[in-house]
Amino acid sequence: MRKTIPLLLLSFCLPLAVHLFRPAEHPMPEAKKLYPSANDTAMVLVRDAALQTTYTTSYDPAYVQLAYPGGDVLRSRGVCSDVVVRAFRAAGIDLQKELHEDITANFDAYPKLWGLTRPDPNIDHRRVANLMVFFERRGAALGITRNPERFLPGDVVAWKLDNGRLHTGIVDSTATKEHTRYLVLHNIGNGTEREDALFSWEIVGHYRYFRSGETRPIEQ
Image (cartoon, rainbow, N blue to C red; front, side, top):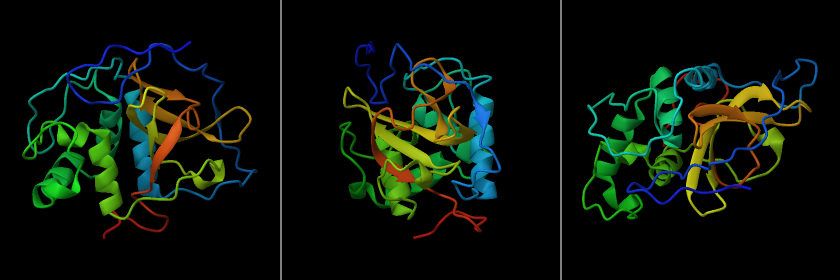
């Protein structure tokens, strides 16, 4: 039975205390071409998010004053959105900077869920709702589906958890033991982990920032 922790000061995705059973991990077999190949840059996201499983070992939603650009909390901790932000930095995209510039120029286009009257580069890019708007504005949004063949390694997924909070993660290049869907890389309580959680909650956002054959972000 899953339990939730008390609501903290910041509106991050809320971690769950008890996790899903993690199946054995197997590479997607080459012989079974259920899915097309992911873009090479998207695979940079996957590799970095997978690397985060070795050093991000806790979930910490504390508000932190960050450097700008390129600011980050201690890499041993973070929230679900930090998995995405760190992976994108490895691919050459600083979401802190990119989102801050966009929200500064288009403040009314972003959610007003936190009582802010102006952009805050310390926290805006670490909020799932803001990332969802940013990705959509960059033309990266895909249709909502539960068809596993529609997901590629490096895709960013946003979920609504059972408690109504938003959560996000990156689609992995490792498949479930049945080879029916990809695992995801996310931080939902115990640091960055690889889990079979793609369809564990309601999917409310699906984004592909790098498309096949492209070497740069999608533009509007």
